[in-house]
Image: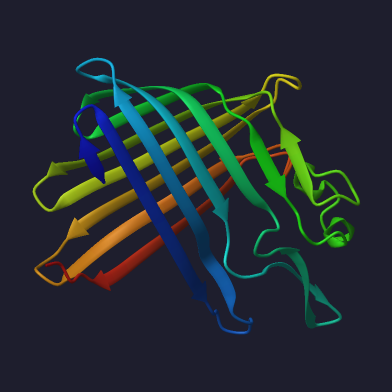
Amino acid sequence: SYRKGKISWNNEFDFIYGAIRNKGQSARKSADRILLDSKVGYDIGEKLNLFFSANFLTQFAPGYNFETVQDEEVRTTISKFMNPGYLTYGLGLEYVPTSYLKVRISPISPRHTFVTDTTLYNNVPKNYGVPIGETVRNEWGGFQLWSDFDKDVMENLNIKTRYFMFGNYETGKLDHRVDFILTAKVNKFLNVNLSAIMLYDEDQADKVQFSQVLGIGFLLKN
């Protein structure tokens, strides 16, 4: 984060990758995300900023749909790096009522959806909204809502949530994503966290997608 006078520049890099292997199954991804977000703001009030932002979202590794055919596991590729990939811009107002809550509203927010593998539609008929035979879909008329909540609700217990919504003015479709992380610090080096993601995007699936992970890990903090 950088600030000089009324001008601020905030950057976030969020990299997550996890895998799990159950008895009788091959290894599978349990979490995979690359998120880059950069925002330049200009204070116009005590709690209000004008801002311009750009964020990029994709994943590291291939994702598969697993099926059992004649007692053998068959996997079909349904995603991979830049399949899909999302680049979204935002121009609007940011409201910061407290240190732990930030809300961005972007009435001008074009988005580009990338699917670099032009054969992926054979496995994913919707092709993540990208026209068949093309590698990018441009949605110039879009709006965006982004909110972040990050607070220690009690000693050694932190809650982080992020809500992201993108709407297309032309189609009227709305995409929603909610990320939730609850972290409990057990001692100086050990913590427990519960994370969950809820996603609704008609270009991916006709229903809400949901995942959750419970983890125990080591924490090293300077």
